[in-house]
Amino acid sequence: MARAFQEGCRVIVRYLFGRGFSSTPDPTSQPQDIQLFTTQILLVLSSSPISWTGENNRFSLVGYSLGGGVAASFTSYFPNLVESLILIAPAGLMRPNHIHWTSRFLYGGFLPGKLVEYLIWRRLGGGNASTPSRSNEDDNKITPTQAAEEETPSHPALTRDSSASISTRRPSVSIADVVSWQLTHHAGFIPSFISSIQHAPVSSQHSSWKTIATNQSSPSPQQRLLEKKVLLLLGRDDNVIIADELSEDAKAVLGDAVDICILDGGHELPVTDADIVAQTIVSFWNQ
View 1: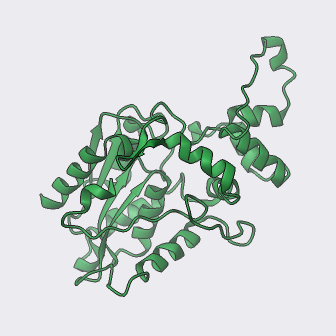
View 2 (view 1 turned 180 degrees about the vertical axis):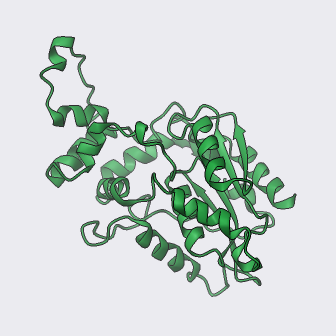
View 3 (view 1 turned 90 degrees about the vertical axis):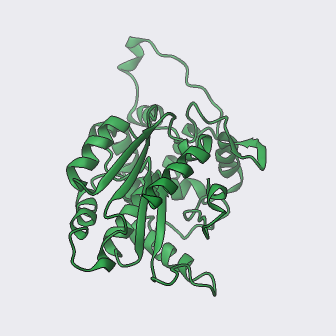
């Protein structure tokens, strides 16, 4: 999607720590929370001798999935830096009923860390193992560990659009291929994934989002977004971030400070429909 902004925009794309080619700070001493991600954003802003914040000392921030939750939280803390905020299928307001008790058990510190890493590795496809079907009688014998492994949500990239290529420049590489590569070659990927689930702004971020809405009434232009609202882009068929639910919850916390656009597609919207997403964002900027 970033390539769609090449004309007229200066774009930087960053991996969250522990993803892609990014290294991994030790999650035991530096958990993957908003403090770590805020530090990363500020480091990125200092990465070039040419200022990323331009003449107004502000920049547009586009966040996708977990990055959307991070972007919203960052904006609530640093409104003076963010000129425009775009959230694509963002984390942050995920409803508690979507978090199964087994996931709470798995990520709650009740199991040894290495066991949790192994279970997550298997669930994300590292073991390529299928779970045999069980009878109702067997259900009564399942252990909490087995339940946790089976109920752990798979990676968002392993959904119905996982065969989509990541880029027109690399059509042979799919989203699922990238996840598989990380499972095989990136030792920090699983610890980062687990730490993010435990500490990142995935849910219950209503206060941060409300702060963004409140700032739009500030007398200081530096505290307000240029459009005085957030653009929220959702996939109609997204089974990770449910469009109808997030639309309702976002309106409740942001009020008039949000434009919601629901597009055809799933959670991989910025990959499978990059041009449409980019056009929608540009239209928002030009309105």
